[in-house]
Length: 379
Image 1: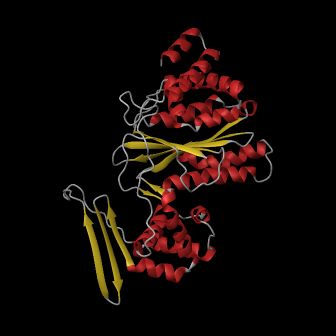
Image 2 (image 1 turned 180 degrees about the vertical axis):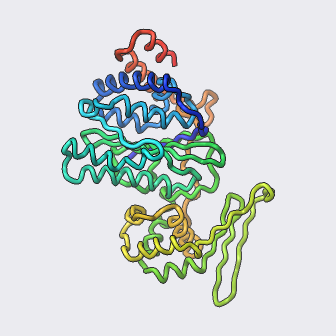
């Protein structure tokens, strides 16, 4: 399975109606051509490529480096194929905000309309939900998912394009998933990442290096509620980007380890987090201990499990049992095709040329007038 991440500035403006209408019009023609030439599965594969997705948004005239490209492009494509989904064999569900919550119902609605085999719709819904959970809970990079779109074909190929926002630094990060050769929804899911900067100290439980920590999380809940709560009770963690404090209590005595970054705390207050005082966490841990998931994927798939539960189990595993997770941001590079000065790596000319050629071909074969074609090709 291939996925990717892209990071952008957070856009608070609105797409003007005249632009959206033209994006829908051009998008409709390009989708028709691409599906006719390459089939719906190939279109979905390309949507799952963050570079190709970004290029498509730019061709349709949206700001290339704004978070709105993700939400507006997805909405434009969804509108562009409306009433043509069955003919194209291509379906788009979900979207931004409240619309994202409709994704499961929309998937199941199409599954019924298409008379897909029993269980196919439920499997697609499961993949959709797991994609959101993994990116929201297992990669704790400070981005909260607010946009989720699910693309799938009649043949069963699917892709997820979702985006999270970080209000603190006014940025957004986009995550891509693709179903081809899907083997593991948890371990090292991201392969292509576009980000202006990597985030220090990012809890990354999708990393292969986090395998022992993931296994220990399953073992902790399998041991039962009382043992895991004893671990939670002796572990109090205070964490922020600027401090980390761990206190261990035993027979009335307490040992505290404190690490502080060399920063001015008048501007950067320490945020306290005490897992032992969270009743909701206790409720979810009790549920997990009762159901006893056999795998980490089953643990994450359990309703109610979120970032705090994942973080608590991970911290217990690291501090008390020595199973350290990865704190490396999965972001790998900053530009779609490389940089002209070879930073962070030389320009990938082959990929660059293929992206241009594919989009140019779609524009030329579309049914737009000559002027609109010229404008799209110039972009």
